[in-house]
Length: 393
Image (tube, rainbow, N blue to C red; front, side):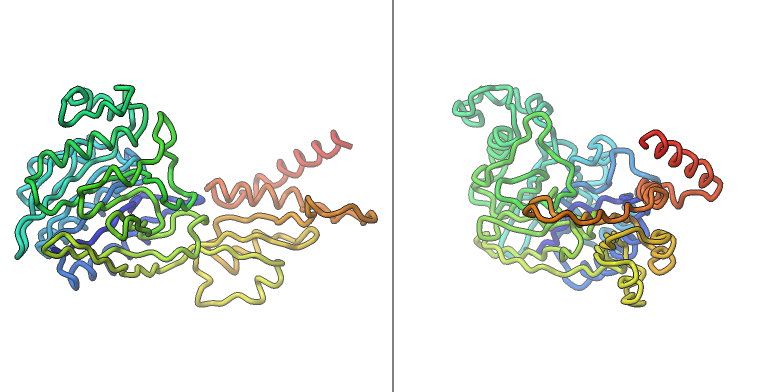
């Protein structure tokens, strides 16, 4: 059986006020749909964080609707989809029971409902488990904690204070619904111990959501995970994160993005291949003096989404305006500190001129997503800066 495993689409994401939806549509409706057509999988698995927030923008909902229709109706490939910690499970799973016969399997709960797919070797059971916080897991699993088969006395506190203990019961509960000896795939969203974060994921540490031990997934032939944006695997490839299709913060700049093509043999053995996703515009970080960056500008990459860190030793003239003229998708501007904090004492040297306060204000205004500082605000800003400098003198 063959799967395409993806996750963390974060439809509707913005960065520095710039919308990613056009880039998401270009990539998912282009290269990703081409992958579905070319690989002919038995199912597409989307392991959570479909949207970037619980109430997504209308255009993001339309894009998901279009993508699912093209995959399921257009190419005849079923889709397994679960909510992640960014999604609202109730909204995402609307009409889930009506959509299952059409080929769209949405997990409307962390408890999931395992279902079979068939290939030439028999059934493969899919166990989709939507994201749930530890308190919600405690509520969902409370009825089975005392069960001699599903419960686990070694867990201690029946309140299930963390994800690890919750998954210990959850995985056992899901496997109890699958026929003995059948091949098994779990779809889940969370942080498995040993995973490498990118720095842009929303933390799951609130409410006792500590990492889940990989041993909790024993008995599943493949575990398709979402949450971590870097593609990675553990347990000899049996437990894997597909990663996000795009870099969604400058912490992910330069990180390769892909979709996992997973093949399962008659015994449940797994082979996986990363199919690269190449964005139309990359996220990049440029470091250097202003004049050097402008002189070395490459027209072929000038439209990338940029964070620029200027290393000029002194004040520079209108860096934001000059950089935006050369790099229209500049999202962040920062100024490097040149004084090494751990430098040994030495002879005193003249202090470098301070960076112009008005330029810092302009950079801050742009970074907050409100666009360039309006010209009408410049006299007010200058007066406020002068007043503050006078008060400090």
